[in-house]
Length: 545
Image (tube, rainbow, N blue to C red):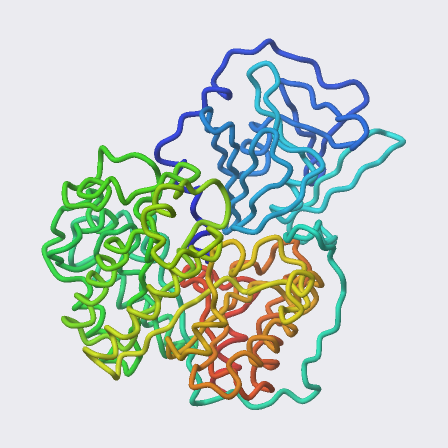
């Protein structure tokens, strides 16, 4: 999910930028090419240049950081540039024909390049992804960048490869249906990288962490929210005392260090005191946000069972193909179910990584007792077994505890499977995460499903209303409830449909017209608290009318 959208933030802590620190000869600006940001000329010590044929203007990565106010990182080993601004994480790798933007795949005419020790990036693509309008004047060979209210936003290329932005239709009822008073209104609370809670400034300070959580609940409840989905296992670690996994570093700054209290017990009690639901959110197969193990506690799975670990794109995963590893994760989740009064167990889409190489050839040979012909089908069977067995464990211990999963918003494209959705997604749950959500629904292996439908009503390649309708058809006639995952983090970006907070309200109005939709969950708390484009007032008005 959009937790995954922050996967590249790890570079902030561990990567140097040798290419940017290399001494270079001062260059004159390229003859005839000028770049202006809101009327002020952008100066560069290295000349921009245009790649022939594709007509793409390349500029130094430093221009993006110094002029556009973004954070930039260069990983020499993977030859990858990462750009972070607000809620956007953009990653490009040399010789790679696509970029990753908040975990969506976008085709590129030209990717990042390393010219004589300087990292060069495509100016238009980066600027538009950061919400700027880009204009090119051929006569004067001038590029004009406009931000904020100065820009009349032109939608950028689609953030799902294979499609183009389109206006689409917005089938929102003329008279909005009433808000569903009994519906679930939830918020994901990310703890990884201290994104939503607790703050880095609260490390080791029990009182401050508790006060921050109380303040968070105050604000969320004022918006009309009645449930939180708190990430209690961000990286095979714990926000609670555990005999199986180490304390999370996001509580104290050091993994394995006791924060002096039980944060999960406190959060559950404080949440229930307000009449709100508390769902414990687990990243099932993520072992670590980077490939470094020197700062991991001795009880971390990467230290105790390195044979279970796969390094994919410089992130560590627990191999779902190893039965003992799956059982260990189930045991760790059940520790929470049995010890805490949680309302639900919630999994995100951290099954197999959606991109990069995942080396599980040895596991495929060693643990394929069913003689499944293809590795893809074997991977899906591994996840199916995990979901089925976890559901059985939860229901055996505490039948009242809800079990839900939040998969990627597109199961399969209709071009690949005629029963799939009318979408053109470059990534799908079934084919990339090996998450056969349809089977989970049909078999009743979960209580609710929350697809991450992170696109607008006017985004043609993955149109919101089409996807919600598709998911509604999937759960119809089953006992699986349907909640929809929304993306307020996109408000104010240049992607089609996100230029007004009314987009979220229109989505909620559409949900209310679909009988199967029983609630919404928003990603994430920090993005709601920023009140993008006046969203908080709109939500409060909607939910309290």
